[in-house]
Amino acid sequence: MDVALSRNGRRVLRAFFVLLVVFLYAPIAILLLFSFNDSPVPAFPLSGFTTQWYRDFAANPDLKGALGTSAIVAALSSAAAVFLGVLAAIALVRRRFPAKPAASALLLAPLVIPYIVFGISLLLFFHATGVPRSLLTVVIGHIVITLPYTILVLVPRLTQIDVNLEEAAYDLGAGPFRTFGWVVLPLIVPAVLSAFLIAFTTSFDEYAVASFVVGTRQTFPIYLYSALRFPSRLPQVIAVAVVVMVASLLVVVGAEIGRRIAERRLGTITPS
Amino acid sequence: MRLRSAFATTTLLGFPVAWLVVFFVVPIAIVALYSFDVYTLFPEQHGFTLAAWRGFFHSSVYLGLFWKSVKMSLIVSVVVVLLAYPVAYYLALSGTKRKYVLLLILIAPFLTSYLLRVLAWKVILGNNGVFNSFLVWTGIRSADHPVSQLLYSRFAVMLVLAYVWVPFVALPIFVSLDTLDRRLLEAASDLGASRLQGFLRVTLPLSLPGVAAGFLFVFIPTVGEFVTPSLVGGTSGYMYGNQIADLFSTGFPDWETGSVLALFLLGVVAVLTLVFSRFTQMREAP
Image (cartoon, rainbow over all chains, first blue to last red; front, side, top):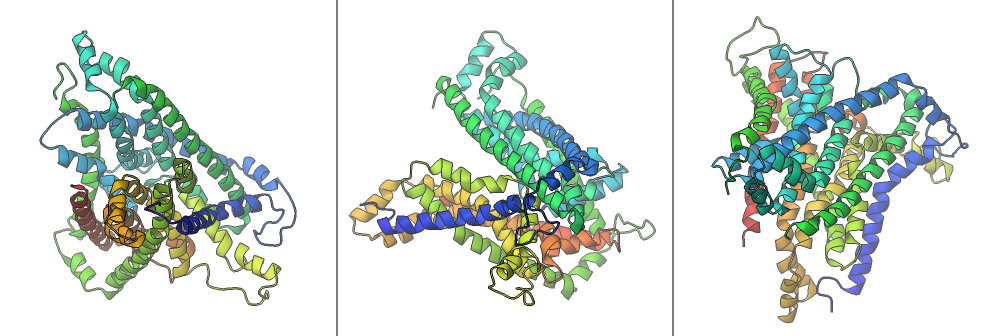
């Protein structure tokens, strides 16, 4: 006898799981359906197949510019966040110091701050210090938001790595840079990559904080938000939504599978 | 352990901590200065006062809006936990071999664009949107009587927020159930407990830290939400976060009052986080 579930209980829960997955994917499927619908208004009945909205979006310089801007912002902020995250994670895992609980509380605090509060804090900060709002101010904000995510990804991986490997490198005369570059880094590469991807997707999609500190050049979410006020642009927005959603799904799922495979291989040289 | 010739702890921690102090702690401190009128948007009215705080606690509008947001957010959090729990239970305890694949399927939508998922519901819920036009097209309702007030309502805000957060909440609940020692359930069963008793007295109490974490994961971002209500909420779905955003917008800015509203929200969230993390740690200790 199964102690957790009866046979009927399992059936009911499986049906519930399927229903919830349908609920989660139906809106995405509806966007996909209407992105190919030959009508400027997304409504039933369907009026025919078209790829016009995808061509419109491919020909829209503002939209493509906003996508490019967001890619730059996300790349810069996630690279910086991963760099800071690696430093912080090594300190938290490998060092003992009295203020550790306070340090880790500070490092993870941006996870729980409501973004509206952080957004206006940055707005007032840049106002008080006289820094003009620009893409740089968005990057600064996104580094703060994504730093805790990188730490949360890196810390579990670092704790798996045998500290004796580093000891051995030092015994053999390697300095801290060589030890990090030749011993630690190769072992945490999968975690570093997945930290980068999580930070990148978070920044690419971030609207709330960016809306308070963005300058004249729009990021993609900012463009999207303003485009939602014009019904005439809706079909294009739906097309670009489909492209972005499918791309991010593929990247995220691919990255997760890749990380699992890589860590399984690397895992053989670390104690479990 | 302290490794010889390794990087000093201060070198490692210096950069990330300094970054957060300058761009996270100091900005919040500046909000506090604004809330006490030490800094002001219009420089002529300087000086420390409690006027903005007094105004806030005497204002039925702001506090009313705060309670409305708390209520909406509580409903969303409870509904989302109730939806996520059985699903997490199924994945963790049904013995299915593909539980990590199924978990990824469940969570993947959460990892796609937030704004675009809200957009999808805007397209679905409109008066002439996908849902209503489907009802008309299939003859369930006549074109003159659409199901109105789907979009731009409190209901729309709560529906979209629940939709957005369900996958994420399943994660901590799954983790707490997945690490559950099945032998405890077997022991309960050997001692004559039914499955329901085993669930109520073993599984449920042991999974409460995951439930608490999941609840907090939804409540914190939704209580200060302003993006979703501004897109699908209309006037009846207007939340506390919208009020804060409006006080900083270009129309009639009032940065002092806005700072008070923001700090109040931050305080409530901070207290909740501390209480919940204490609760979670207590439960985890053997």
